[in-house]
Length: 294
DNA sequence: TTGCAGGGGTCAA
DNA sequence: TTGACCCCTGCA
Image (cartoon, rainbow, N blue to C red; front, side, top):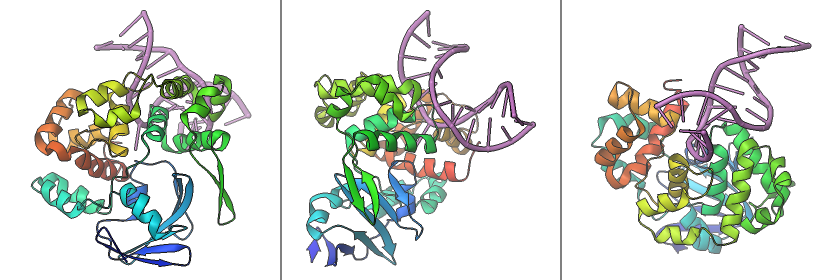
């Protein structure tokens, strides 16, 4: 059947989306935007998203989603995988920049996921001055402690906890996720969301500048984390999360010298315009995988 | 075996 | 503008 221009074949507990362009699970799930998709032995990825567990893989040009229906695809995965966007055209529009050619070739299968903004808030608070394996562990522990248990393929998975569940918990228990000094931020962020002191839905309606400012009212959220939340929730694309990797790759490929955060942001805004979020992701993935500047 | 640096930034002084 | 910061892995 045809769903939003995609030829979708529904079969025994799985769906196949035919001829998907500009998508590779490794690029998309391992480019740093998500902490909860786990690569399996066979190279496929399994994740607990939106209260369900699915397994995603690529067979030729076909995207295979196990444990999902065509109806799920229409109502959820289409949006989650940003399937409405033509990434070939994004890359074409960024192709004026010779520096970006190689990073875009390298991460050709990246799609920016439209993830839950609350999950992004907590995940990227945890990411501050932290390492990826540890971030993943803390997010996992939070889910195991407070999330709902799901089963798939004989294994257990857990949904990401709701703000209320973390807010009602005491801080000592939250600290069991081993996120260190960030645990008090997690707890307070949960309380702010649960009590409506910060409205994540309202952030969607704001202009980018206001959205940044609103998110930064939450403790543990500075400029970089705010931009990650906005970009990886599919809320804003004219943001440029600048962490140590992006800073180094910008200095190495563009500035040929040290540059300040403001210089980098101004440069990216001027050069990439409203596509700067995509440019950032290709550059970040390229820089980290090649350990540029490390 | 023990010790120490360092990591997807942010906060407070 | 500059340190400290939880935690814990990697490496000397």
